[in-house]
Length: 350
Length: 214
Image 1: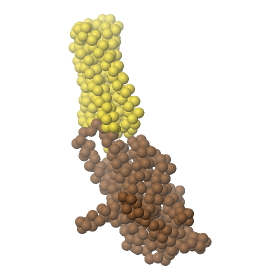
Image 2 (image 1 turned 180 degrees about the vertical axis):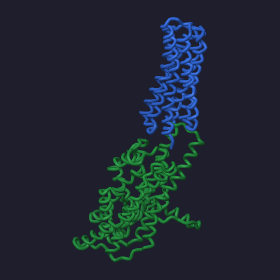
Image 3 (image 1 turned 30 degrees about the vertical axis):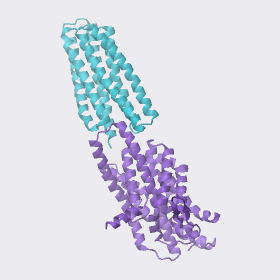
Image 4 (image 1 turned 90 degrees about the horizontal axis):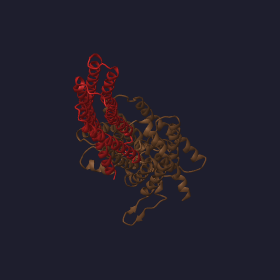
């Protein structure tokens, strides 16, 4: 068991950094503008990230596993570590980085190292979703902006009451955002361990709930790591997001958070996908997307809805560099680290 | 819980703005009573406006403390408090003018009586429009600009009336003593100052309204 925990540590570290950084995308403005207290935000975020991860995290994880059948714990550990290292290096270089993109790059690195065939259909689906998700966020934000503006124009609400309603709306959007973050991004944290963990863990029968599967156990561990990141480190990031980067009013913050949460949910919900397919409607691929880029897309959407002034379009260029640079760097790190683990530490990685 | 606190603050702000309106009406009645020689009524108005000013100060402090204590409207708290504090100057000036009249007892010149009453009416209307604009700021910002246009218009009217009173006092021959001319000018300026204070708040309100947009 201790060996398993050592192997899982890289994934847990990725989870911790996801909690420390990405929770701020969901709760940053609410906490930074002091509309919601940090403790409340951290608690709600942790609880709903875990619920989202355990009960809805399998969809995006399945897509990720199509990129490579990682059946050895040591391989999964190295991939997650390479992804974590890429995130660190990109962050140090002040480049926009996403855990989703680095984990995909690291898996590709593994596929090249293991000479395993890459599922290009899944890969193109994932790349397409990365480009599409900020665009979709912007579109959702534009629609929500006009809807909220219309409501505020026609339903005359006192400023003080509006503040209370906005506060509640921000909490609900934060809960939904946290759930969607857990559901969509747990694949980045624990997705690579799913196959190898089946050899180590066994399903647990729980009273009233029924079977608690191996994947759910794994995602619970990942969710707890995210929660640890939220409680230990996200406050600083939240204050920066809330007061520094995006100068949003509480109402526009609500629009941005809700838009991003909707997009993350669309790319994570198995139930929604099954429902749309049952109605013969086009469904969304279940792919881990970047919550940061989804937020940036929504902020730009709000900017466009407000007349398109003061939008920093250069950020779009930087994001698109990240779509290519992050997976390439992560694949490189992954390849080198797998070589070291396989040949120096004599661990089986595929 | 939060909604009940919000309802309490809403009620407090409504009452406060109502007090500003009431103070301007008491002021107008007070000036009219004084210039028409009804000094009993004038004394009552002085007492009324003093009580109202005191009550409004307490109410404003209560609103301020609750907004900070309950961390309400963090985004526009400064603007709301700025609005309430500056609008308080209007009540203060209205009270100050009536109190000064009650102490200094300026002479009522028949040639200027109607002008002073008109100046007081215009200043009062100016405050009424400011209160309308302030209420709109809280509930329907689309109505703020029209009310602010009226505030600016009435302030300009008050300036013209003030200038007319001063011209009459200094160029007419019915007042010979320079001290009395100066006394007339002093009160014309003071009454007109109420409209000036209303306009100063209106200018702030213009900015707050832009900031309140989505």
